[in-house]
Image (cartoon, rainbow, N blue to C red; front, side, top):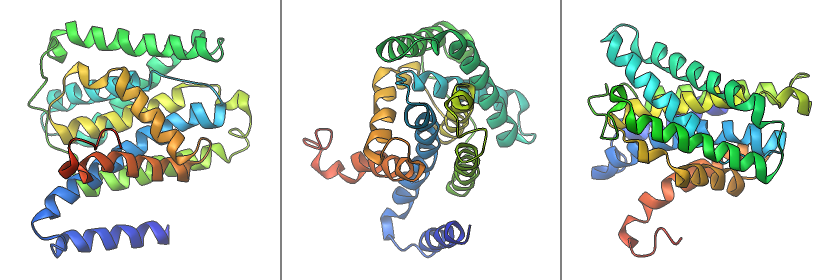
Length: 253
């Protein structure tokens, strides 16, 4: 807790005193992106790392959280928005996790990966055709509710809960972690923060490549390690932006 507080204080002071000059706002945006990506990646690590199952549909749960939270915040129009929207997005993704998890987790290995990937594609196609989500066009006008401060502390709460869960008596057994809705809930929370930071979304943002990107961040950090997920997500989510001057080679790197 002391370490997290000191890290937050150091980053906030750097932003407050414009330590990065003209790039301060840009760096703050990268840090905010890293925060909600960490939530998504650590939640995926619950399935891939701690449960040992190969899921390729995490972008589907993220998109459910993102779109549901955006719809809820728009409907509330200014009354306790962010917290309610995040809970709504997380719960919606969690319910989808139950719906997918009950049949899919009877499968193993490649078969589970195929089913979760299919789920993500089905969700994406649905969002492309629902008028409430823009009907395949950009869903814009989402309220700008996610700031670095909010994203940072939401990330801290989510990672702490997952950390305590995997080290609890309940979480030490594979049977306990069999409930995919826990990972789906936090994926939805990450999607909710994402939606209210980007303020505009299209369903193609949540395609197979996005699921693969989240999975690569789990693997880079180390499966079965929440600390690794934090490092992997922060590193890989920032790398494309930090290498923008090397545009020809940045995606290869």
